[in-house]
Length: 167
Ligand SMILES: [Mg+2]
Image 1 (cartoon, rainbow, N blue to C red):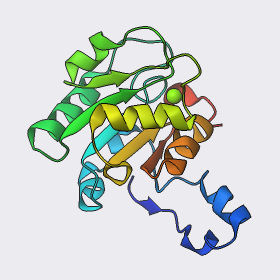
Image 2 (image 1 turned 180 degrees about the horizontal axis):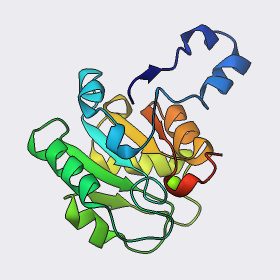
Image 3 (image 1 turned 90 degrees about the vertical axis):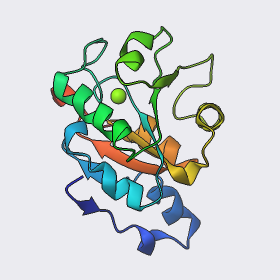
Image 4 (image 1 turned 90 degrees about the horizontal axis):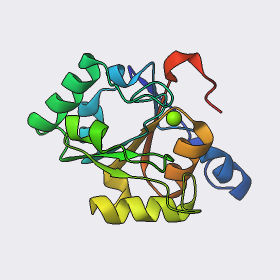
């Protein structure tokens, strides 16, 4: 996140432009490790929803790097954020991953998967924060950024691990 704030306010006003703005993240970062969580906190974010594949771990993987674990633990322990949640379209348990960083997980449920509105409603209910206090951090513009922007969340696009496409 160091430190591109996408100026999308000028797009608001006309519906077509507003829809296009849904694809624009509020922030971009080279990786999860470069996300400045204090900037999010200052903006009113209290909970981070983390995409799993290609954001937290490589696709299909189950191992976070020690640096990622340390960063996320620090974010919690210093009280920068109050809650972490894994927001993934996986249908199998990611409890093992979540336990390392004391997070909960919201998996796909039938057709309720990112970027559907129902998935993000489910996420809001799980964390019990209003959307403007939740930052969705992910590597895909369509599933992570578009869906979370429509739900009224703060969005952070990270470069995918392993150099996959962001679309
Ligand atoms: Mg992903």
